[in-house]
Amino acid sequence: MDKTNLNENAGDGKQKLQAQISRLVQMCKESKKVMIVIAVFLLIIIGALAVITFSEKKEEVVATTEAEVAAEEDEIVVPEEALEKDAYPEVNNLIKQYYQALVDGDMETIKSIKSYVDEEEELKIIKKSEFIESYPTIIVYTKKGLEEGSFIAYVQYEVKFKDIEKTAPGLNTLYVCVKEDGTYYINSGELEESHIEYLKTISLQNDVVDLFNTVQVAYNDTKTQDEALSTFLDELPNLLAEAVSEAMIEQEAAEEALHPEKEEEGPEVVLVVTKVKTTDVVNVRSSDSVEADKLGKTTKGQVLELVEERLNGWSKVIFDGKEGFIKSEYLQPEETEMQLSTEVPEGASVESMDTLDKNYPKKGKVTDAVNIRKTSSIEADVVGHLNKGESVEILDELNNGWTKIKYSDGEAYIKSDFVKVEGTQSSATEATVVTESETDETKSEQTPGVSKKGKVTETVRMRRTPNLDGTVIGLLAKGSEIEIIEQLEDGWTKIKRTNGEAYVKSDYVEMQ
Image (cartoon, rainbow, N blue to C red; front, top):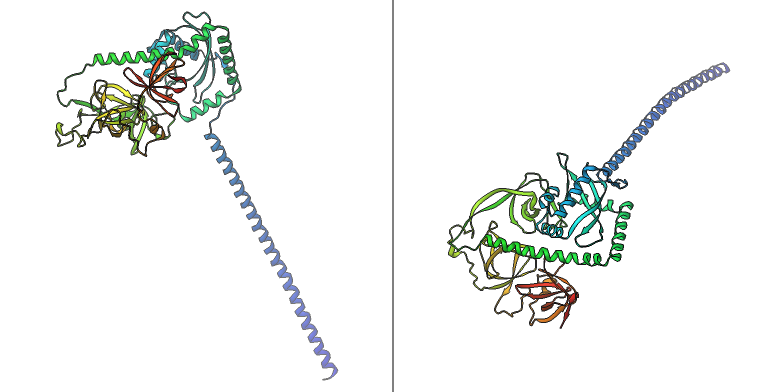
């Protein structure tokens, strides 16, 4: 190959190489544009994701805040407001009208002012009015109640007793509510847990505590300075208990006189309330106490099956398929049916009503407070009542859910649900049979062998049952001699009375 050809080939190769380099440069330029576009696109996506994430977090924070606000709205808000003195004329008038009615023993006025007054409280008010001359000083301090328009009233007063020269200071807490027509009343019925907690919180505020302390100091100073007043104030609770007990006995005797015993002429047809209707929204509880667990709430006008109406102001009903208790004041009869007083089962004769077990009389114990009725029907006349733990002599157990017991000089009936058979009575001195299922308290109440003599060291109350909630049935003056049936392990002594048994605190009993 000559030199010319070599030069031509070299030139061609150089041109080709330059062309390839140019194409590569162009491709790089184009690739750079694509990469920039891709990078910009990625930045846009990343930015959008960041905005979305921030928005979600913001929404989450907002949602959490709203949830916290909702939770706070459910909580009871207790205002930190100072006590107001005689700030509401209508409330003051209500309180003064109430205290004047206490002086007069005017139960008609009191019942129009208070939402609920039971029989024992009524007797206590009437008897206490016999000792009170006047309330010369009444100051009403108030704080806002839980509901709109309601008040917690702290009533500071001076009371003048008859035949006592000096007045005594006192303080009472009342919950004042307003009716739909705008008039005020004292709410003495069952309060919701929210009301109770609200009252507790308000009463722990500094100005309320200071008010209580001020009155307490004044009360203590008054007792120290006036011996006659101090002695009277110490004796007043016992005087009232004795007066109320005597009044209840007289009331029962009067009722018996108005309803003399009739000759039995076979089964009596009676009208029995079988269903009741609620007059308001009310709590249903597991037992007959405002401290018992809540099973739920009724609606106003709800119809329920009535199981038992009790003497203590409660009724047992069927609620959501199970038994519960409602204050009787919130119920009214809804449905009744005609029944024989002995509730003869279909196809059975009156003579066949007795149970097959004829091993009577038996000993039994009442498991809860229950009415004693003339016949085996909740519509029959109430001739007395028994408290939880009292012993009974069972004469018969009927197929209709009632138990015939010995009562006074005759017979009476109680619901079988409230009596437990303890064993067959073979003799008057036979020991009570105690089953494993009974409580320790029941086990301690064994029939004693021989009664002993004793006396009381201080004036002491006699109660139907061995607990401070037991009904007071009389007083024993200091030095009174007693016949001791048994000393229980829980600090109570069972004693013999002319018409039965009673219990007194062992602290005030001295063996002879």
